[in-house]
Image (cartoon, rainbow, N blue to C red):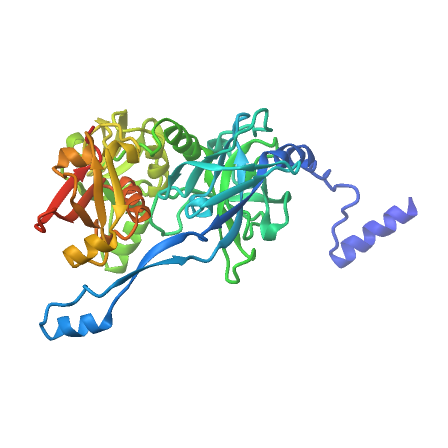
Amino acid sequence: MKKLFFSAVLALTFGLMPVCAVASQPAALVDLTQAAETSVNSVVYIKVVSGGKMQTVVAQDHFGDIFDFFGFGFGGRGGQQRQVQTPKRQSAGSGVIISRDGYIVTNNHVVKDADQIEVKLNDNREFTGRIIGLDETTDLALIKVDAKDLPAITIGNSDDLKLGQWVLAVGNPFNLTSTVTAGIVSAKARTLGANGIESFIQTDAAINAGNSGGALVNERGELVGINAMLVSQTGNNTGYGFAIPTTIMNKVVADLKEFGVVQRALLGVSGTDVTNYIDSEREKGNEVDLGTVTGVYVNSVSEGSAAEEAGLQKGDVVTNIDGREVKKMAELQEALSQHRPGDKVGIKYVRNKSVKTANVTLRNAQGNTTVMEEVDIDDFGVQLVPLGAKEKSAYGLSYGLLVNNIRKGKLQSAGMTKGMIILVVNDQRMNSTEDWEEAVRMANKSSDRTLWIRAVTSSGRKASFVVDLNEK
């Protein structure tokens, strides 16, 4: 008793607060062991091999260029076609098993240039992977291995994440397989200023090179995001990591499975966060009162878009879409990313401090609601072969693809016939059939999905053709 009294006197005399009698009980620690043990088996190591192929290149005759410069017209005739071996390059990343029959989600940047994909599971089983679909806009890719009864992860709802909630990043950083790091959700709907759809989950869980495509899981071991990148001054984890939320991933995966390409729904507005707009106006000395301090300020409305049909105008502020509150552009993008062209959604917006509503039918990049499908090379109905020495000599060409055979298909419908020589597709020279396949692949991912073809007929006449990949 005397000791307690003496302690109290000391505390009052020296300004100390007695803590032994009033200290609160420490909060229970979150147990992440089950989440780690479960999710680590669903995350795979992906090794990518690219290059190492024989490619046809044209070595230009510089003497011909000189003659052409002086007006003799010999330029381009002296090029020599050679076969060269490109060096092999290897890279690695991570992926997440999302179905027992072998579908795996990873990042587009992990596998986009792959010639070979090797997938290794946590139990050391190895498989060959093949690409089902790629989406550069969201940096997501879907690959598949031929296997059954794989340890698929449980997919959670990233919308349910709270700031400060514990998460685990599971992946293979620095080739250290099956690595788990822990952190909290630092922010949601984060943008980094790059092109594409961005509504990242930000976390301080350590993410390093090799974590790309790995899993971000909650304390129950449910997948809530696909790790995509880190922001660091050194290139290693000294900052924050960013993951693509499952709300976006689910839609991308469904589209890639069904169509081979993402069905992207557009509202048809360009804009910025209201806070950014207000700050920029204040820097100019202008006071702004929009009637709200959150939402997406509309800078412009695209002609013929869903937004124009709904009556949206420059200066409006979109605050809600499809019953979902929108506080900034990233949230609007995330909401739209879960829809397909043709979907009808409700919109709330503020104009002149008054709340208005509208119902709109979302459209694709072409301004309609048509479903886009990946183009199969066979749909072109054409057999192409690189020019031989005979054709090069006859036409004075150093590159091109000969239409060796043609049947009913997209090129025949466009007016092409057997014997023509394809020189350029969308500003890319055609030296090999790989060039043709690459040009088609890039056009299929573009907004207008069009092939602009420059060719030479069998009589030597120059010709141009347009192939719309949206047409059946």
